[in-house]
Image 1 (cartoon, one colour):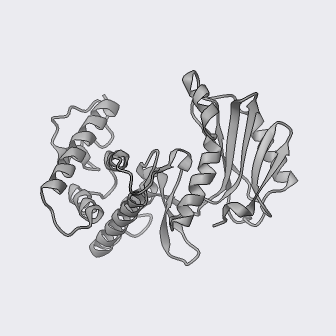
Image 2 (cartoon, rainbow, N blue to C red; image 1 turned 180 degrees about the vertical axis):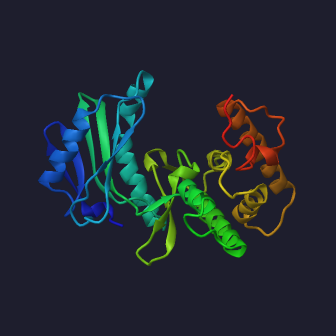
Length: 291
């Protein structure tokens, strides 16, 4: 993973660019900026796949385009970096802390006066698949389903990674399972890669904050193929990592269940009196609930 010293600042017309030395060239610049310029402004960021280039010819490149927020959000952008710049900053911080994140080839920002007009980030594909897609493939027999011992080990590893992530002060902006990629590392082993880091924040580890709880709700609220209620409890035991289950741990578990019920009621209109085991069962009546 590169470090900040590997990036260079440059200009291309109205664009202020930060690019990875040796990976950015005129052809890639023209192709990227042309694609960004063609897009119609949208409320949400848009992602596009590009043909690979530079030293990453075997991997696709992904372009994410950000648009200026409306109203007060535009004023807030005067006081902070663009989402693209934050993406690069947090990806490098994650890498330095020992986590995996996509390699950023370039970030760009166009401003009119002090206001950001649009920004983009170009990254290298991580060579894996989302946790959701991975579990779907296992469920459908496209890849071998892990033995029970392997599954429990994987849950423990996932819990330990998320706990370390929080212990070091990181809070992900949207830690849903689709933003966790099971990726192929250079060592040949499978690793967990954090995606969409433009809203990731890092607080001093000594600073008390409860935003990490929101990440647990984001992870917990989706039924996942082959993941049972017992598996969710195993994850919590691994996350708490203290070898015991006392009142404090029980309160957190009840809080997480209540928040999960609330989020599914808000998003999917599922009544909060539903049995929780049925609510979270992958092949149960509420797995793909529509009113």
